[in-house]
Length: 272
Image 1 (cartoon, rainbow, N blue to C red):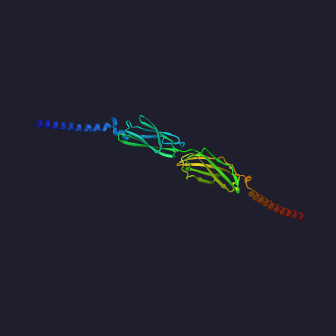
Image 2 (image 1 turned 180 degrees about the vertical axis):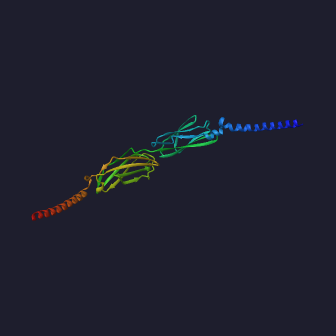
Image 3 (image 1 turned 135 degrees about the vertical axis):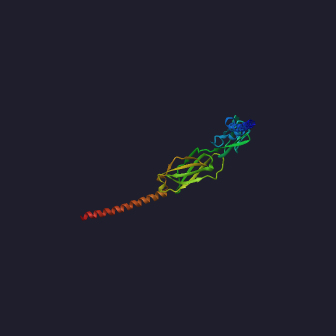
C-alpha cells in the first residue's frame, strides 16, 4: 500500500514537471524569435526612411532643376511631390523617384515629397532658391552740379531686386544706402542709385565705392564697384574762389606776423 502511494506521488510530480516545461518552451521561443528571425512587415515600415535631395539648391531665375526622392521602403504603396513650382518630367526606379521643376522664378520655395509604406506615410523636405548675383556694379565718375557732386551707381542684371541693398561707402563709413524692398518683380532687373554729395574737406582724396548686397535669409551675396576719388580740381568756381581767398588771407596773416617779428629783431640788433 505504501509503495502504491509513493508511485502515485512520483507520477504526479512527473506530470507537473512536464507541464511546466511545455509552458516555458513557447515563452523562450517568443523571446528569441525577433532576434533570429526577419522583421515583420509592420516592423520594417516603422524603420523606413525618406530623403529628398539636394536639400538646398540655388538656380538662376527661369532655370529648371531635378530633385530625387528616395526611400528604403521595399514595396512603396504611394509617392508624390508637393510644390507650388511647375512640374515637368518624372522618372523612377527601385527605391527612388526624380521630379523636374520648370522655370523657377520664386526666390525661395519649399518642396516636399512623401512615400507610403505598409500604411504609414513619411515626408522629406528641400528648398529651391532662385537668385542672380549682379552682373556688374559701376560707379560713374562724379559730376559737379552747382555746389554738389552727382554720384550714380548702376547695378545690372540682379535678382531678386526686393532683397537688394545698395550703399555708397567712403573710407570706412557709409555715406548713403537704400533698400529696395518695394520692388516685387520676378525678372532680372537693372538698378540705378543717384546721390547728391555736398563736397567738404573730409571727402577729398578718400576713395568712394558702391556696394550691392543681397540678403537672402542667411545667404548674403556681395558685389562692389571700382573706387573713385574726389579731388580739389573738381570743385566749382565758387569753392575755388573761397579756397583761394582763405589761402590768401592766411598768407597775409603770416606775412604780417613775420614782418612784425623781423622789425623787432632788427630794432634789437640796432640797440646792441
